[in-house]
Length: 432
Image (cartoon, rainbow, N blue to C red; front, side, top):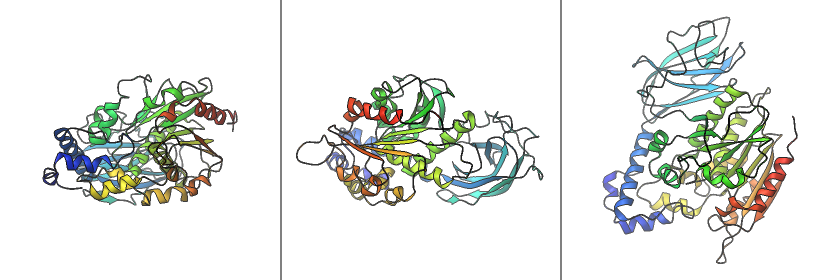
């Protein structure tokens, strides 16, 4: 990342030449000189603000009590709850907050109302001074009903609604929308690249529903790609068995580091699991969404316990750049402002190399779909090289590898792919 004054020394032509090469097909739209400079400044401001966060992380253990766990970040200076993290069972937690003095607390939410009552087992940790740009980890908490530590402050489901302390809004967790919701637009997708913080506040990241939760149906989590949005799934969503499956739509800004996007996704799913206790979920992902989804799965696998309560019978990736994209590496090297996610999709990045090292859950069938509709002699889908889509360490984990003569976005409207997807869905047993 560079200072804004350096951006001003680049001509519009120089910026266009350097930025056009750093994304997938149509990833970075060509803009006029003034518009491009404005977008770069917006991205730079978002990066600077994100760099000013502090990370608070730890793990919760429980010695008794049946119910979801609510972890609380309490701002000592403001005397208010700053954020809540909900989990269905003991596991790691994390917060991204402004610098300050915080105390971590947790309670077993016996009645599942996301509010603290004095008869609910609780614990509270020591205060910690959180510094901008640094990570405070090891903030572990143990809840022991035999040694209760009543919380000296109130916690309710609206505790963080003022927005005065929270730097970023909590992810969406089950807002019911239509497939043609105005938030699902190309304009908002571009906003997620150039101004991801504004995207979080004005659009809303997280998991959206197309219908109220139905415990009789298996959720399918659809994860879009870079500069994508849930509307990209319209064709495939319209062709799944809606009597057996319920579509859930992930929405996220493109720009952040992929680890952060995966953490956001896992946090939203954790809240949904605590709320609905769904036993199974299917993941279907496109392009960079496959990297995000696999990152979230790997995090969940790392946190697995023997009494795991959620199973993933099927994971599908479509046209995913498992080996990254060379244009991202050029962008990191040459662009005056570097979108954080470019570092993760550059070939041989630590993020990419770590993905295949964690095995998928033992019950998971992995299906890899790829496209080869590119023309001009290159083996690609018009955007992602086959050498990246068909990474050998990822291929060896797949139960099925199927190619389609389609372009990168056109593959999402492929009748042949829809048929293969439905065959994979139909193979899921009716019950565990």
